[in-house]
Length: 442
Image (cartoon, rainbow, N blue to C red; front, side, top):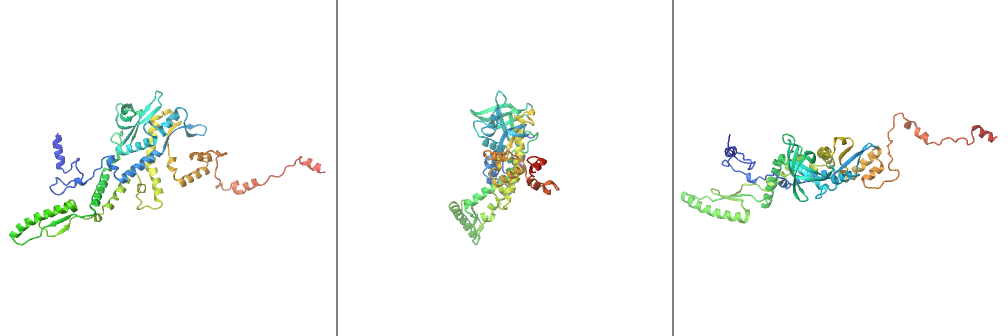
């Protein structure tokens, strides 16, 4: 069994040191090592310095936070679910939609839940219950551990009086893990763990681009000595020229090129040994990371403000793809966990907790108008129900259900002129009876 020291030596001999850079060249004797030039990204703070990741993370968090969490009960008269705000249910919805705890709003709370899930792999929420068992506050945990033997979580969170630690049954902890999990399926793995190579590449390109931009596109130079004839002349003149060149190189290096001038012997001219920023196209290479980061974050490129290859239809299609393939699965995950931890099996089919997606359509006036028109024509909603979504007062006779009659059954009365016949006035009935009327005329 190898000691830790021997294991460390073996690792370094193999040319890979986990604590050092991903880019090494053996032990350094066979060539240069550029490990110091690599910008590693292992934390959320460093990842957010990359514009594409910042935009993708903010977009996902804000989108999830826009959907309102609603406690609903089954309306036995209509057979559908409606928001319930009576008695303790009103406080329940207040916590879910307005103020989960005295330190935060619901929007910030659910936004941070998404950030914790993606950046750290797990989001833990402690349910503080009252004596009656109803929730009194929801606290987002800073750190939590799970013990499968006792089915309990140990959670640390910021409370009203500073840091609080609590050990609670799994029924009092809302756990939202990331997509992929460690072996056993309990704890999620951070997206940064899989994306760190791509993020490190993007950060390294950003660093190189900044260095090139700071130099103004200047090049590295070689300054060589002038050759002299004869043995004595080469030795004496060469040594003299070397000193002069070193002095000249230091002056140019300090005053002009700041470390990009190298003095060598045996050369009789000045030449470039590096390309300018324009030749290396560093700023174009940085675009390569945009697509890769968007793939890792499940965000279309157009939504990450990359409109280079998009058409006028791309943003609308990409937005729908984002909602269906990224947001909808996250919505289902949150709904299932809330229903599982906040409701009982007896509530199934009678009560539910639902994430309402209507706020996501509020600023798409044209799209929302088309949906409202379709629901009105098919009888899915009434006029007053549509007006209620926009906080508009009800109107008389606005609760009637309408159904469009543009379609008719082949061979039905509508096509045979039955509607026209019904519109004609009915024949007048005798006022005094048939025969009596004739007799009166006599």
